[in-house]
Structures are given as structure tokens and as C-alpha cells.
Image (cartoon, rainbow, N blue to C red; front, side):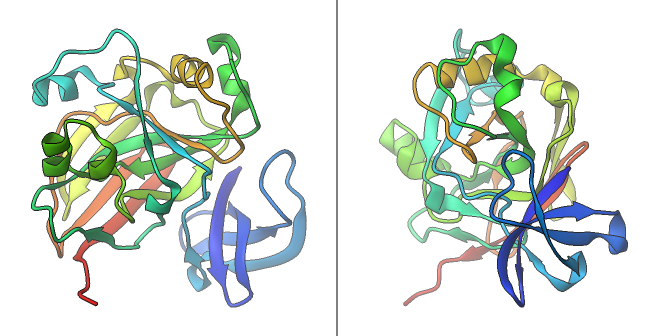
Length: 259
């Protein structure tokens, strides 16, 4: 199932997105998409509604240094264990929403990533059962103020600005995430091109590692790491991340408006 979240003339709703191309239909889900969704009977052509971030997580947990080539381009060493950090849920935006560039940063980077969406409360999940707690997968952009990251010596400020976690366009629930092509384009030029099979720590291990530390809740999002090719975005550019079997997440960059 392809799960999304939309703004329609009737309000905000979770939906199941059916069909392809211009024929896609958004069918309204009653209440929430977890478990076995029930439907209200209302639907809209997808072209007539606005896609929002497919989920509003209680927390976004990220994995750093999870592709060897990216570790090398950043001048580090591959970690023996997963490196985790958090982004606030206030950083989440949906497709086509603007990434707002902080006026005090001159080096904001895109980082295309596969995101895992958790489907039920869980703690201390063994890797062998990790995929049982997954609702599905979506596309993410772990936007980073690289100069702030380097200045601070840790990652919280540089990763946490409002709009620094684009997610979408929807959640794919029937997908094998082990070997998917991932591509990031900046104004149509390919900047990142890799496969999820090159993750240093795969998704079951990541879920086991994180859930040993903290309880995961339905809708929580895990960003699995970015491949090599990260680089700066400036106002007026558009970054598009495409993951095989899911789709494309596009967001323009814009300067912060002066109040």
C-alpha cells in the first residue's frame, strides 16, 4: 500500500494513494494508517490535493557515517557501530515545501536518504524481527548546515533548523529495502548515486541498535544515512531525491524572510 497525507478542501487526512501517473487517486483513511486502515469512502484525484509530509513523527532518529564512500569524502573513518543522532519533528516538511536557508549559514548541504517509518511501539527489537515493526519506507533529505556542524563539534544545531527534514512523497509499505537505487539531483544534475545495499549497517541492525536505547513509537522515522556526493544548495535551487520503488521528493531552497 502507498500511504500519504494530504491537504484537501475538506482538511488534512491520511490517504491510500492508488493508480499511476495522472490517474492517481487519494482515498481517505479514517483516523490513522497504522494496523489495518479503514476508509471513509471519500476520495480525490491526487492532482486536486496537496501532498504533505506523509507522517509527523514524535522523533526523527538518524544514522551518520553509514556509507563508506561518504565517510571517506568527509575525511573520517567508518564506525564499528551505528552512530545515531536526532532531528526535531519541527524540521519535517513535505514535498515541494521550501527548505528555508538560515541567514547565519553559508554552507547548507543536501543529503538524500532512505527513511524507515515505524509501525508500532517497540523496544529492544532483535534484528531478526526488526522488519516486523516497520510500517514502510519513504524518501528523506537530511539537510545540514555544514558550517554549524563543524563549528559546534557536534550535529544538533546544524541538523535541526525548521524545514531541514523533507519527507515524502508517500510511504511504501510493500518494499524490500535491501538493494534500492538512490539518486539526488540538484537542478536536474545528478550529485548522489548509490544503492542501499552499500549501507554499512543495514536496516535490521539499525532498528536493533536504536531500540536498545529508546522506545520507538508508531510514526517515528529513521534516516538510514547518505551516500557520497553531498554538497551545497543555495536559494533558487531545487534538490530532488529519488529512491527506486518509492518515488521522488523535490524541495526548492529559499532564503529566510526578514520579519
